[in-house]
Image (cartoon, rainbow, N blue to C red):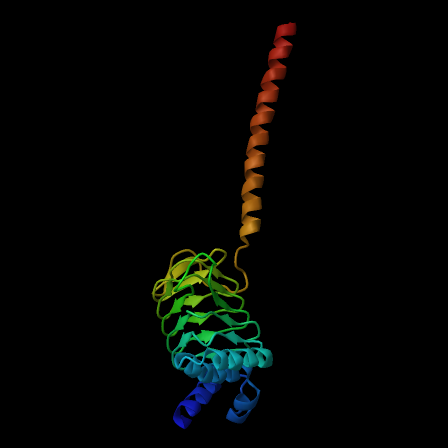
Length: 222
């Protein structure tokens, strides 16, 4: 137990440049506290003591702002940075050495039963505010950009961005564009631009027709 605790503390020290000491991480880091509470709640959940399990998880939610269902399956060395607003659903599965930032939802769509939530492989990074919704797999070493909404499977070693998310890199090879967690294209803006171009094209056609009609009227009068 103490070996695992030290390993998790060392992990936070490695991944968070703001961490000054293990003492600070242990007593003040909400993500670390939420994961420790989840480990306890999950034990009670797997031993069919569901009320106690939920009591522990809800108490941790009120203290940390992070909600992890005790039925979720989480591997080693999960790092939740900042953490406020993170929600991890009941049938979520998370592999080893994953990183999740604030505002992330690993949830369902409301259309599925049984396995309703996503499965994250090993070494997956999920950026702040991203939503991963549905019972599909996010492959090992995948990266999901901040604010992305992922609704379908993400391959191993891939980078997904946007709403809905699209794959822009696989195995380091660019498909469309680099991962940019700030300058991600706004799909609403893109659609408005497309509509504007269509309207401009239609107006050109209308103007041409109008000129033709005026020309015919003038010729008829002659």
